[in-house]
Amino acid sequence: MTTTQRTSESDARADAGESTTPRPTWWVKLIAFAGCLLTLWHVGASFLWIAPYSALREIPTQQVLSSYMLPMFGQSWSVFAPEPINGDYHFNVRAVIEKDGEEVETGWVSATDVELSMIRYNLFPPRAGIQSSEVASGQMNAFNKLDEQQQAVVALDYTEDGWEDWMSRSFDELEGDHPSPAAYLAEEHLSTAYATQVAYAIWGADAVVQVQYRVSRQNVVPYAERNEPGAQRPEPTFSTTGWRLPIEEEGQNRDNFATTFRAQFERTQR
Image (cartoon, rainbow, N blue to C red; front, side, top):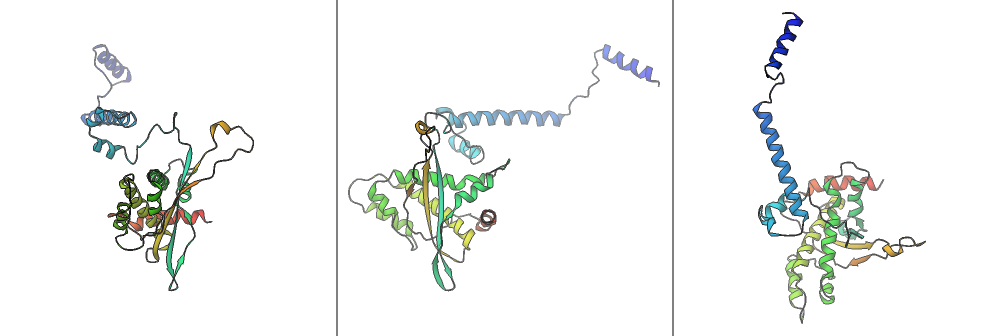
């Protein structure tokens, strides 16, 4: 068959309304349909998550929505007015370790600086780069809701087995009316568990005897003073906590944490 004949047959099929473009197979259509459904779900879930709470959140249920959005897609309006983020949180850790048969107190290590170095100048920043900031924010917010007597309880050392129950009883034994410490106790557990992993990663799980964490917040230069020569950031504020016996969450993998964290810590020390 000559080229002229093939062209004539193609023109004839086109004139008869026949398409020369191959139709997509069934599996291509299925993938495209699934992609559309996934896009619709993601856009809808993001809208429900960002928008103010309403009964619409209960359509997929709050638990389903939270498990999908966190930790990868979590976001909020906190970067916008009227209350934008206006300060930095830092999470510092030190430990008492056994060295040459003696217990030695280490210096402070900024877990936040180590993590931020993972995402600085990184086009594909890991989620691990903001964990300590989130832990610090939750701890300080809960700490600031305690009254002066309760904060004094937090500042004590708890270095014996069952220390969380001991702290809880210490709150209960305070005389008079006080805010509920339930939220703080949850943040205390999380913060100590995180500090434990940091200490194990840096100084070794076999060496660490006690851990202590220190959370600080430093606000940015006030907006009204932003153009003043010599304007400086306010002094940081701290939540005062004592020494703690290390604790670990069930299912935590200290080896995986140590592999990632220690390698980055060593890079920051060069």
